[in-house]
Length: 313
Image (cartoon, rainbow, N blue to C red; front, side, top):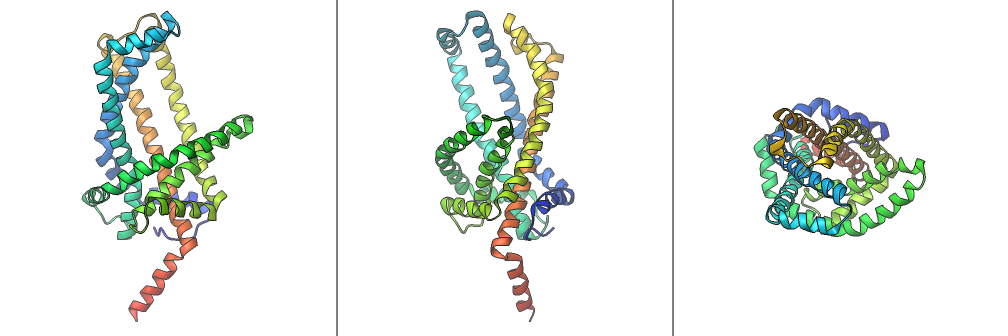
């Protein structure tokens, strides 16, 4: 599949599914080879934190009311474990974020370079290693610029939520925010621009065909939200039953039956895995949009054809 080609609204959709159909096996095999173990570890820790601390807080709030002293007492009684847990979750979350978030841009850059899937897991890992500094810069500068952006987007989101119809616009607002960052990282991996220049370039790309790009990606976010909502509905029922038990008396993992633990873990991991996979598919769509917009603005494929003709002569 050719990445650099001018695309319209329909092509953004069609080429996303075409890419997954043609390269999905290679894409997800490498994706889970790199991130599978980390997803498992982070999932276990997230489940442990949710089970251990959430139920204890529910119990304290229900029995003792909204009492700050109870929260302080809870924190003091579990201070060492609480601090270690927070540090572990933060470190693993950052590592998880870098690996998961950077995978799709790296994959597409290698796909572009090799003009197909003629690359291996080691090639992907080498790109990770070679761009460690870029990922760190992206993380730091991305956080800095996110502060004013979140405030701005938060105000817009608040305005949208005032009306029922406006709520439907929130996925498109999220799409704009996420796509700015995704395209920034894609551009940084070309080694031609720093973070700030790449961020500005990403905005120019999006604004060149704003409604087509944001509309398409926003619909993908809306679809992902509906799927996650369906899974979350089942998960919330089970958690609700467990929370009712916690209100009467918090139950630790050591007091739970094996069947209950297994069922809870399975549902939690299915939700976690589906969420991660959907986010990755959205990134595929964002990449397709990126290459389509870049071709429209720079005519890269046309220049390549001319260069090939010239070299043939």
